[in-house]
Image (cartoon, rainbow over all chains, first blue to last red; front, side, top):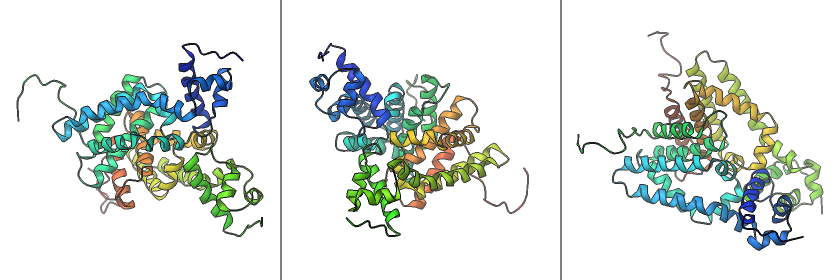
Length: 195
Length: 195
C-alpha cells in the first residue's frame, strides 16, 4: 500500500524491468507485472515511469549516448582503416561492459521497433558505414553487418568460462579478421615514420 | 462467423502469425489478434492451433529439422576444417533461404525461451563445437559464437541492394575469415593429390 519511493526505487525498477523484459519480452511485460515483482503498487511504479516505453528509454538512453560518442570519435579518424578499427574496438568494449543488457534487448522486436523510431537507426547506419568502407561493394556491407551482429550476439550468448577481457580481445580479433583489418602495430607510434 | 477452414487456412495462419510475432513479439501476440488479422473467429484459429506455442512450433519445426540434418552431416566429416567448413556453408545457406523468419524470431526472448526448452539448445551447442574446434581455447568459442550470431543477424538485417547469392557468398567468406578457414580449393578435387 505504501508508496515506497526511496532513492533506490528508481534503479530497482529499472533492474526488475530488464529482468522481466528478458523473461517475457518487452511487449509481454506490463507495469503491473513490474509492480508485483517489486512488491509495490502500480501507482508507485507510475510515480517514476508512466509507461513501459518510458522505462525502456531510461534503460537504453545511457547506452545510446555512449554509442553516439564512440561513433562520432571514429568518424574523426583520417583513414578508412583507422575509422573501422576505432569503431570496432569501441563497440566491442561497449558491448562487453553491457553484455547482460545486450543479450536481453538485442533482438526483442518490441525493443527494436522502439529504437528504430529513435536515434539508434541512424546511428546503426553510421556504424555500418564505418565498418563497411574498408571492403568495397556489397561484401563490405555484409561483413560489417556480420561484425555488429556477431559482437552483440556472442556477448549476449553468455559463453561459459570466458571472462570479460578474453571476450573483448577475441571479439576484436574476430572483427578484424572478418573485415580484413590488420591490428595496429602500436596504439601510439613511437616514431612518426612513413613507409 | 463462418469457420473458413479451407486447405490454405493453416498456411495463412502461419504466415500471419509470423508477421504478428515480428510486429508485437511472440509474447505480445494472442490467438485473438491472429484471428482478427485473418478476419476469422478465434474458434477457427483454435481448430488448427490450440495455443501460440503450437503455432510457433509449426513455424519453427521444419527449420529445426533442416538444421539437424546439416549438423549431423557436418559431424561426419573427417577433419576439423572440413567439419567447420560444412557447418558454415550449410548454416549460411539455411539462413539465407529463411532470412525473413530469422530476422523475426532470432532474438525474441519468448521464442528463445521456448527453443531452449526444446531440441535447439543442444543443436546450437553442437554447431558451436563444430565451428570452435578449428581455433583452440576460449578464442575459438568466441569466434564460433560471432559467426553464428553474425550470419543470422546480417541476414535478418535486410541489407538494401544485396541479393541472396551475394549475401550467401559474403556470409561464408566472412565466416571463413573470422574462423581462419581457407576456402576449399575445389568442391570435388580433380586429382587425389596429396601435398
